[in-house]
Length: 249
Image (tube, rainbow, N blue to C red; front, side):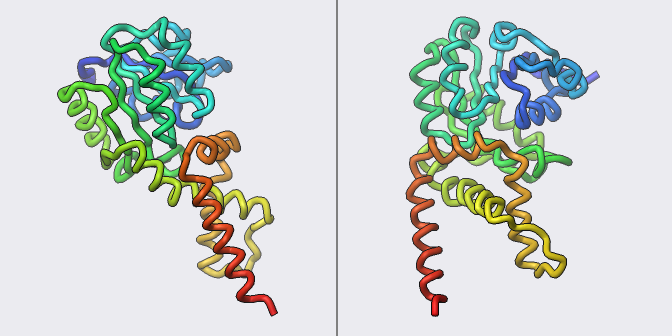
């Protein structure tokens, strides 16, 4: 039987695409209590999790809200009455500045806070976490606990990258947000296989495939809450107009 580490009780709030992925990969290491308002009992148990009420999931040693960025503040307010002293709250949002501000403002001083962004999802990490990156920022957490968290992530094969929320959002606007913006544009213009696809076009279609399984709300939130997303979009659109002008007769 696998020996569970200290602080082995984890509460996951939300069993969407990312929440279910975390339960799948970490249920062998932790006892995971999962709150999901939709009827997902069978799916939660199939991945090794334990269906739980909101209060029960929120009362664990480590609590991970796996909810849309726009829903995070409401969940944090609801968490306040159920968190135990000394708990660790870990966010997994694809934007960092706004969630970090919200956690510092809304969570009690008696709990620790670790900001993270898993740079992977159910599609890219379908077979393994090995080699994927996770960005972390120690908002309010002791050195020993932070070191244990990083060791655990590395033991799963993840590359742990420490970065400030501001730097994360600046970089992610030029990578993830840009990729999703291009992918959504490809979907909107009806891009699809033609039967005579070049290798370059096939790579473009892979961008489309990367984003089409994610929700529109995720796309909307990563653009709305990342301060660096609007200037990125403006630069891209200006560049497209410039290229278009150059090929006009």
